[in-house]
Image (spheres, rainbow, N blue to C red):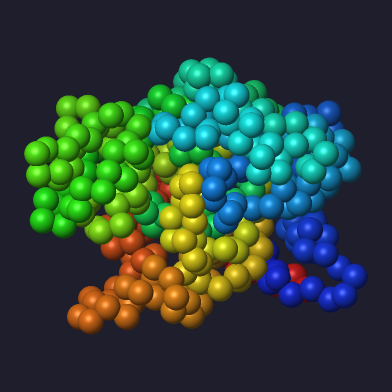
Length: 375
């Protein structure tokens, strides 16, 4: 496979030129206009941010992308699937209210919001996975597959289970229905270090399956017979008392996300956009966002989601960590075993390299790319 082209621009602007306008210039130069949008339904897959989280992408960026699609005759809509865990996006009604409260509506973006897997997260379709090794089929939100064209608009950030949240995470995990998310998460279950547990109760609040209980000593216990292995408790624990003791679980999660992305993208026009800004250590699914671990870097676009994620990773690895952050705190700890990898140093239990390696192996894209700078 030949090198992919990834287009990049930073967040610098001159007076009179807005960042949304600069994003439009980027995606036009990256070739979005080569897609035949005329009369086509176009799914813009993005994350609306959990209520309380302020790191998600502003709706202004969604409008900028949607405006370009409409100029080309397309019919764009913003979409995401319901979550596996309790929160403000657990069903379509709450999810739509969440999106509205975070600023995503027809006035701010010029297009409708559709929750792809329906009211209860059960409106999905079984899709074959081309070259799938772990998932022969994938359960995907129906509206996402009903669209003629897929555009991913991704907030590139850290992630407590996947290492980073990029295009593959946005599409593969985000595009899975609730059942699809469960199937991606079902390898391995976390365990609690009883000595480290403070009994604060936060992990149980985040648990989507009521698998966490507390003994007389107020220490948490995760029932492996009930646990879905979603990993929310790992990110919730402020004391590093919860980890996934199954070494293959992180690998499997990353590989399955790549295969779900393959199922969603295969055989139809796709285009991918990522913004490296507000690089929080954890997912936008959290109802809070910690300080960024890295400075704002820029906006990128490509037809290849693997090359795009690899380019984002490479740019992040070259950036200087922010001292007052989760990453900075870890690096400053006496005796910290440095990984020389910002995502692993921020969340040491992650296996992010498997996402890109497996995605390339199954033909989703290539990790080899040429970075083309757009001024």
